[in-house]
Image (cartoon, rainbow, N blue to C red; front, side, top):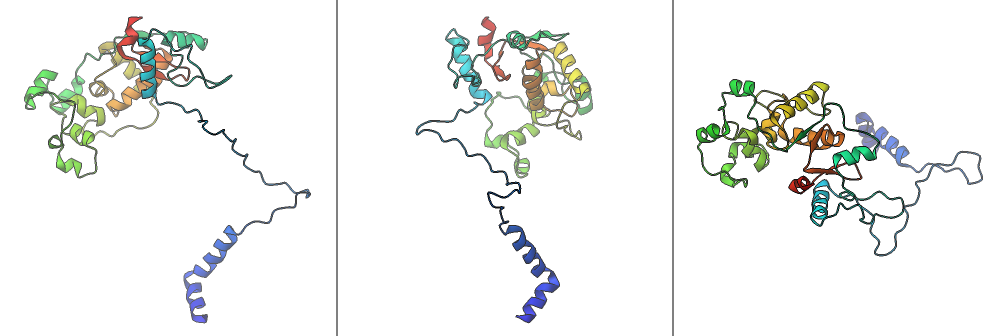
Length: 275
């Protein structure tokens, strides 16, 4: 025993065990009638009746489907039931136009606002085309890349095994092989070779570049091509910035979107253009 204690002392385990026991030992509590401050207790969770379900916030995709159906039925969801007195309607409930949403907040359209038909009409940024040696049009790029019939569904044979071996998803690995044939797919998930991808909040310069590109070429689809005009950003980042920042502020009016009571942009598609 003495030898074991000596060995433990040399490597510091004995002292560590003592410190651990002290740390996990229950601390003495002051008596209820003591003047010492009592430790704060977490309030008990309110009990729900049998069969009662706690309200949940729906995803924006589900909200879009709900809102689109309400528009198809000829309503806007404003008369849909909420979760109780004073409760905020769920996602997709009470959808309204961007202008109506801003008015409900006591705001007006920002200076320099403009409308979009939801389509990007440009090609890869000219400087990127020149630097990477890309074709000058979509048709030319497709033919030079081998042609064939375009399919949205990715087959296993289309996914490069060397990229799949990196642990990438099929979509990411496939997109990485499409820079010359289908640059929209490539730039949706990847920046130009050798260019790092920016993360986090957008800078004022990136915002201005986004707006200038949208004003010149349109905005709302082909996010990979759109992203080629904004260095260090990829397509899905531009798409998220559009729906989470641009649409709620009303800087660009897009009839395919509605705003719900949570302040989220809800995609309703072409149904929104009937107004």
